[in-house]
Length: 390
Image 1 (spheres, rainbow, N blue to C red):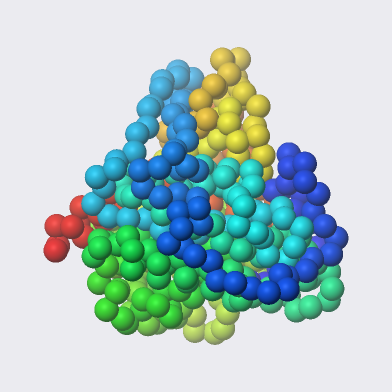
Image 2: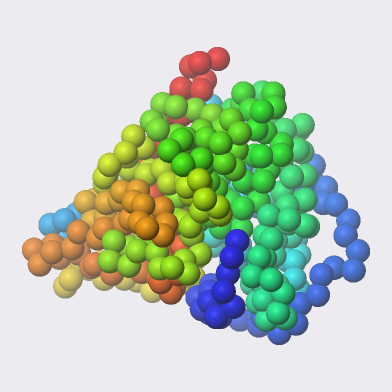
């Protein structure tokens, strides 16, 4: 993952808006490293049937194009036919290079935003792991080391690999599974798929890999042959054993030349983009789940007026049918998910969806939010297809 030093303060500032614990100027890795015991439930943020980070209020206010509001309730499915295994992005505000195993507000918040909703279609597993922290990222680049942070290497990767192996040994029982990650989590899972799944017998249980805000790539003009040898891009919701990946940018602000996402690592390769609103290609309507009155990835959001002159939204989430659409696009520089906001004078809804950092980051902070409903629907259909094919 190439990150220019000048962009890190913007990310740190965004993700730590309301966190009271300071980010240390210097970061030190643990003196000794002991593998985590992932047979211990305390090492997991989410597991099926528990009151944990996934057992949160996901009720939603639907804000229609005419300004009317309705309520959408949510419930999990403890009898879901498949599992989901989630690795969260760089959010830890711990002082050291790698986080500890005590989740703070940021880790809990990102699970709510990016993963808990999948509990309606799959059993949720989300390990804690000693990720590279915001402080670690900042200190490494500030010390003049390479722009290659290597988020998919070292302690963070080892923890996730150990958690996945423990899940397979103790919990999976032959069930299909979906891998879900964002940013650092996606970089780690990309390596995990390549080393632990691709071309191996366990691949038969891979329902899909949803790797957002990273850069898995394929051979130009093909659906496979880059990051993975045998795991292709998903081209329909009924397809299983495949990859869904994208990085979102506004239609009015496509990736610049120094973009962090969408630019292939070498000639002959293309960064993967699969539109969750239209896996087969073209444009489609995004089924968004944005933050309502609750917490966003970047901090609590006050009760928001989503309709001009209308009442404040009081649910944690908002869905706005028809407000956003998306299409995978390839420019001279990059391949990306182009997100269009369809605001117009007759639509009383707000047009500002947030999620921006700098042009190089695009809509990185809301990669998962913009396509959440579409992704949940896809996993529901994939789960039924995987079970039906067995």
